[in-house]
Image 1 (tube, rainbow, N blue to C red):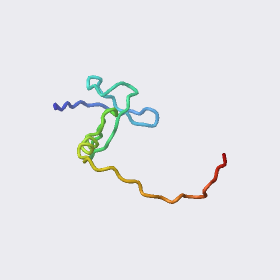
Image 2 (cartoon, helix red, strand yellow; image 1 turned 45 degrees about the vertical axis):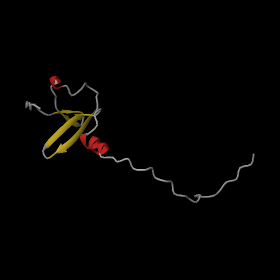
Image 3 (tube, one colour; image 1 turned 60 degrees about the vertical axis):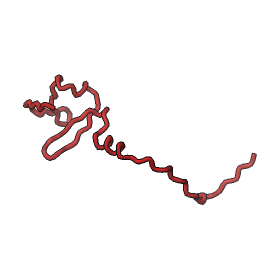
Image 4 (tube, rainbow, N blue to C red; image 1 turned 90 degrees about the vertical axis):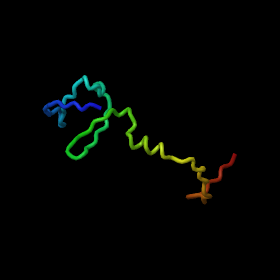
Length: 84
């Protein structure tokens, strides 16, 4: 992956800080969801429609465990009798 560095300035919109992202970077369109995380002093933006790599790694590590059996339970609260 090639790293591209550009300079920009923060600006205020409402009560939030914002920064312009070059359209050529193809992150998405206005209104699309993004996931943000802070890594040290860096802020990482990722499209929200993709699964994080950590989740994909976790799914790949699942084993074919047998299903859990339901434990017997006593009724909770009052028992109600209905008449037909």
